Image (cartoon, rainbow, N blue to C red; front, top):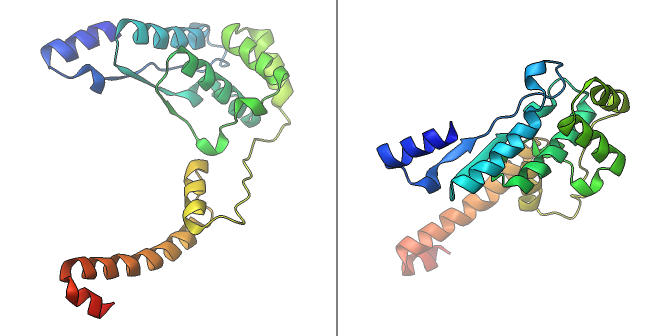
Amino acid sequence: MAKRSYELLTKKYGIDKKDIIFDTLVFPVATGDQKYIGSAIATIEAIREIRKEMLNVKTVLGVSNVSFGLPVAGREVLNSYYMQKAYEAGLDFAIINTEKHIPLTEISDEEKNLSNALLFNTNDNTVADFVVFYIEKKGFRKKNDTGNMTPEEKVANLVVEGSKKELTKLLDILLKQYSAEYYKRTFNDRNGRGGKTFQ
């Protein structure tokens, strides 16, 4: 399907291949639905084949679909682990909640093994093992020390974490600060010598 779409888009409609982004899709691995068994592997292979067969196109993936229905703490680990595997296969863009993304270095070997087994050897046992391990665990939360950050850095940190906490307050501070500086600079730029008088 990707190849047919690629031929149609590039040859019939003249779209630059660098502007094509394929969403490779991934289905939940733990629903028990037999038609989804092996879908996590199929998605990884699809990414790899697209990158191999159609140079210069991009791929995107909504990662969290893979963990639908699992305990929250387990979803966060599985999503993070699967995203890494997708990137290794050649994924360009991932749609994720950055606040809940866990660096691979912070995932234990046991959790990696559980995730790998569930994703790439999906069966009743691997699903049960994963669920039992995470059923009573709390989700991951990033804790950055923002005490010494400037308002700009704090806003950037909130954006990366996907959090709105104190965002309005910080933006109000920055708007007041930058509005005054912007208008002062704009007046100076436009009025030349008169701007110096204003200053």
